[in-house]
Length: 262
Image (cartoon, rainbow, N blue to C red; front, side, top):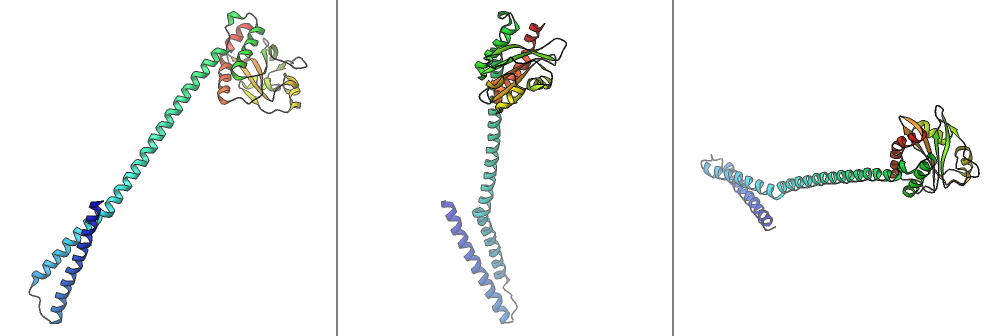
């Protein structure tokens, strides 16, 4: 701050000096012109011109230090800091995303392993399928479930197991592509229906009128074929993380179910 004041004062002094020199030079030339005399004393003019040049250069240099250079340097510094902050933010964002992705993958694999029962402890398809749905209920909070398996050499899916089923009628068999679970089997992907009206259940779902508002159809895939379908009911919509669990389960459960079917 002290240097800035010193430069400003010096700029004022130089500016005044420049004005004085210009005045002296102008007076000398003007007087010589009025007297119609030839200017023999050229040294005065040369000295004035040199002084003007020196003062102008000094003033320009000081002005540059006071304004332009400081502004340019400050602007460059601001741009560098701004870009640096952007890069750091992007790196932090990428690191957080990678950590979350890795954590989600680990959790999905861990949860799926908890859901899939040991095949040696359960002797029938009914007991195994019901154990699977019971384990899902602990992780995803389903309140009802039906498990259908595909009959050999046909496209008919028949009931194999139930979880907390309270329907008035026995769930009906369905064919590939027919009804909601049939469509899920055909598409080989999760089918999620949220906030379904009560009158829609009897026509499309085996769970009947007692079913909660949200349906999840989970096809069980083995060798690119939907060999089974789970029809699950929940009171709340499932999250994207829970969908990942069910999709992973859809692929990893196929080999186990296939052994029971055979």
